[in-house]
Image 1: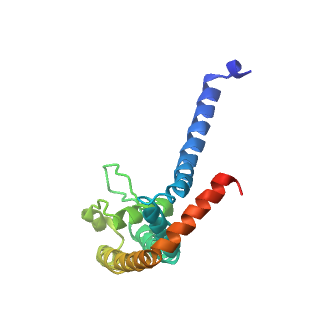
Image 2 (image 1 turned 135 degrees about the vertical axis):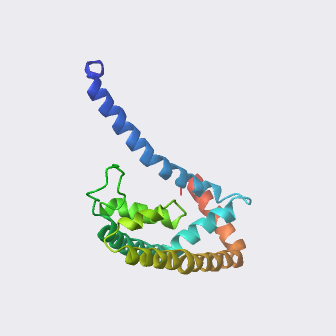
Image 3 (image 1 turned 60 degrees about the vertical axis):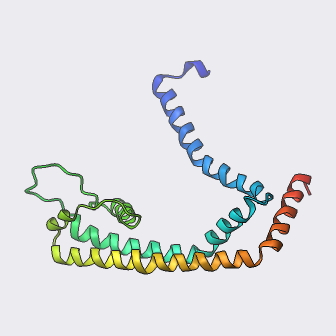
Length: 178
């Protein structure tokens, strides 16, 4: 039955397999970190990653909210296509999803063409909102994230011996099948 697939069906199966595999690989990698907790060299780092990840959930929620709010503003100001524009440039703020991704990329240091603000409904308002977004996200929120991470690091360091013993005991229990 497998030899009776058409080219389109084979392509669809390959696409599905690739998508599922690509989705599973990060999960496999993160589950492998469980076993790295038992070693002296990698255990503290894995515990730090877990602690920082769980400790920054509230921060990530606030960050997502801020990015979504500014992305909405950018859609409203920059989302309308310029009728006189003969060049067919992609407008990354034409939909909320693209604006959300573009605003996030701005957060992590992506490129932004400042001249695109000239085509905004209100260019000066767009410039002000961009500057405000940069200040809030890059200065306030990222400094807060650094402080949260430093606090989590200090907490892990204070409990390093106890957490190392606990991690090793969890690994032994897993290996023994208890």
